[in-house]
Amino acid sequence: MVEHAATGRLLARRSAGSAVVLLVGAGVYALLEGVAKANFDLTPLALGLIAVAAGLFGSRGRPLATGLVLAGWGSAVLLVDHGVVPAARTTPAYMLGIGVGLMVAARLAPAGDRGAWLTSASIVAFASALILYLADGMSGVAHWQLWVVVLIAWAAWELFWSTRQGVVPAGPGDGPAPEGGPSPGTGQFSGRSVPRTR
Image (cartoon, rainbow, N blue to C red; front, side, top):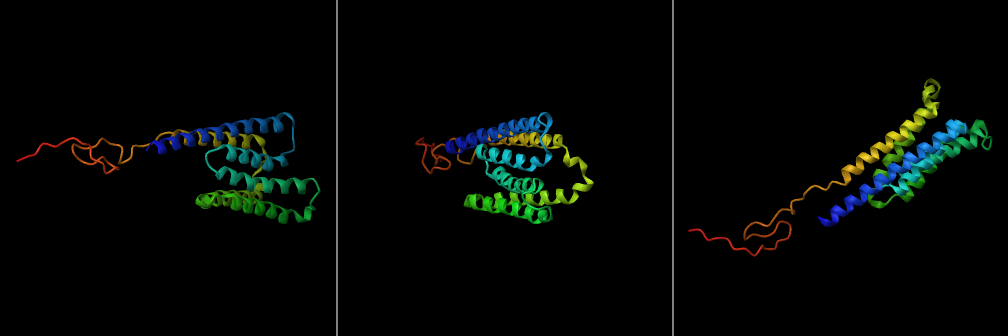
């Protein structure tokens, strides 16, 4: 139980650290877009790098998988928008970027958590493709303020989980040993005698 409690506290600290990284990333991104007036095509890569950093400092690898897909797609966006990749090859470039992100996430995922990593990465890949498909009719997605709000909401979610992970519920073996009986979860007797009844 002591080991379980220590693990819970460690996960809580890391999840809180992930939230801090997301909040700092939101601030830096807001400065780049709102003050420095950076091109909006930087957004997918910026969000991806922020998520990668949150995954490295966070409690779970899922933000890292999410960030890798976004970074792969964002790199392709920059290559296309700056003429490195011909505009006629935009769709294949985006698909390749997302695919590379998925492959790297699958390669880095620990064996015991690979399903969760790939689920997170696949959801982001689907959402990215859906946003691209609907972008013409959803002009709101091209506003950097929206993505600042998304990062702040994500940070709030990580903080919520940090409070949940820091609370360790009592297990079946945490109660006191019954009179003359074995201690729960240990099989050891308490050493106290039980009065004999007649």
